[in-house]
Image (cartoon, rainbow, N blue to C red; front, side, top):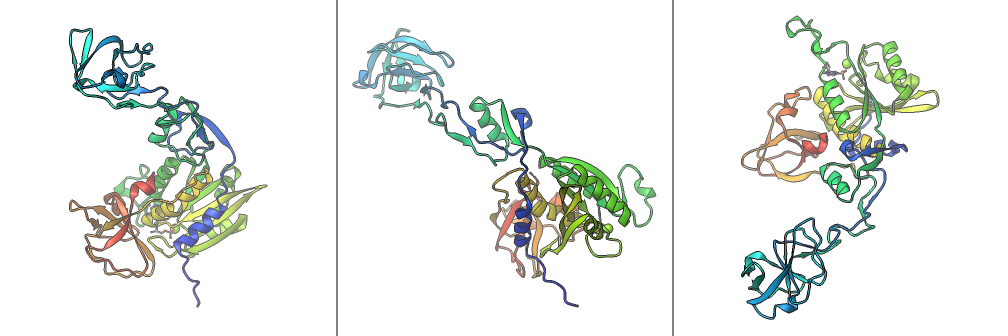
Length: 411
Ligand code: AMP
Ligand code: MG
């Protein structure tokens, strides 16, 4: 029998992203609630930051022309703490000034207090000749009024929220949350908390995928409809899909996408819409399904993940995550990778592109988790990242490899 060739990951991702038309609806959120969300409108600054020229030092504001040489003595005509505006600086005088305070009109330099000697409370000796502009932070040095400080399609995190607040915004317009239905398939699955470990029937396992998939979906800003576990029956799978498609944008499932007799996801999705079953050339991973489920006039995207926990985790991170971000209008959805030095050997020249669970060692080199099997979730806890290893590539200690921090895949 002729088996179709495996699909390269980059082709699968490009195909998927081509289907991820950004959601049109937006919502306006308080900055307090906008973490992780994707901006739907540019943020344009209505003001200059800093708003006025201000002092970068505690010291004295003066006209540099009034200090012809070091040791010049000037009367102190005013005192300007931060948060207070002084008055125009009289010629031939200095103003006591503090960091952040507005530079008074007429002053063109600040001399730091370490270069000054206060004489009798009313006069100050200036011990260094200041160049014009010294220690003045200029108005608009950070942000010019009318400039775009954050562009639509940017995902908001702590720095972006701080910047939006610094130009006076209390709210931002973001893409609405994608509505995602999630269910696991597998008659062997038991929910933790329902059966104690010592009473598990033979063959039963706890449903772990549900928990990390739901957590990852929530971190991606999705509103999750969790349909729990669906039994390995065609009618039950069809019913769950039909229900999910009624109001969700995306249906994510785990398990049942191989083509075994107990894998009902494929025929169920085909009955209600369409499906491509892909064998992706990655390890762990491989089986992955993309399609759609119709509900009246609307269509929900369908994404079927493999059941093996690490496969499920990796395919979610590499394929579903960028899809959900693009759905929210995020422009740059690619994760970042860095070059790193392997501190381990890997002799298997695997035909598929492999994602090895690794972590930094104290010597600044990557260590590999001993058991790289796709069912071993401990590897994902032990690891702080994965090595993205090209097909057919052996690794020797000292080689440069491509490292993707888990933080890039989970955030
Ligand atoms: P499947 O893709 O349905 O053939 O499942 C592949 C393997 O992953 C089997 O050993 C399943 O028991 C396991 N598995 C499937 N779903 C889950 C789940 N939600 N949590 C933990 N393991 C699972
Ligand atoms: Mg199964």
